[in-house]
Image (cartoon, rainbow, N blue to C red):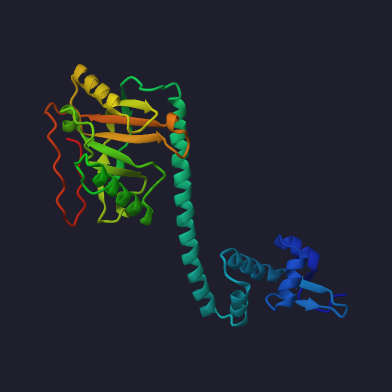
Length: 305
């Protein structure tokens, strides 16, 4: 017969109720962290059902990485104020972990989306025909510093700085970096001038650091061509895009966008897939050369004309 006023259950039943095992309960008792409500003269342990909440709290704190020694210290000096401080600290950690996991999920979702796009284009070999595409929503691109150059060393250092900045500030949503070429340069037969490198992001604009330069890639109609293989062997793609725009008597936007669909993460070099596209504007005016952005406090947002 139990000699305790509060209804109690045996160790095995309590372990099953809390989703743990008797060995854990014995260990917690031995280190003075969590003891049974009652131990009889034969050494059998009994736990009250009200102890479940205490056990669950210990479990949650342990899962957050809090050492058992610290949990024991709190349990030994418990008070409403101490509990509030502890939970506030742990809430901060939980929110940081949720943010980290949300970012990981976004990256995974992006990679799956790119693989799905690539599957729709699995028949592309070499260079695809140019065809119109519709972009349903605006996209935000985080830009490198203005480049407007074909100098390899300058471009490579600019790209490295851009990738490093996006990594440190966790701005990458899983998209490979891309490049923007000025359309007027292509019209002059210069296929090697890069205006900006960019990283596409799913972050809302208000979450992007204010010192980052962003560009809104507008929803609307585009002419696109896909290149299978070497990302840099794109001269034929640019020529095809130019010919299509002229033949169809369309007006192109200020930039050509060059972005990977399949890169080294998911394909061999000969299977890389690159999308090269240009916005088709509603204006009948010829696009003007885009000048470099002057340094300013607010981010410069070049948009299509």
